[in-house]
Picture 1 (cartoon, rainbow, N blue to C red):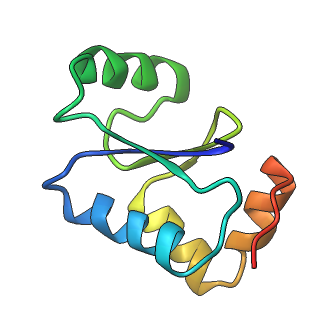
Picture 2 (cartoon, one colour):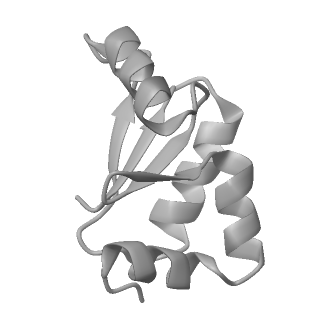
Length: 96
């Protein structure tokens, strides 16, 4: 998937980002969610994300391997009407 959401099941910021990206938009292919707290390699994945993106916190939303930030960033892009252009600009995916 072009959009990957690294999340934790108990995190309210992760829940907000997932809701925006999966319920407010039709992204094709659908965003892939990785729950770091239940994934067998979650700790290692989170460490690799921190090294690769500079973000250790969740959620961490990647488009084609580049982080667009976390929950507040996704919410700000959504509320500012810039989420579609950000995703299509970075991922080239169709959003309805």
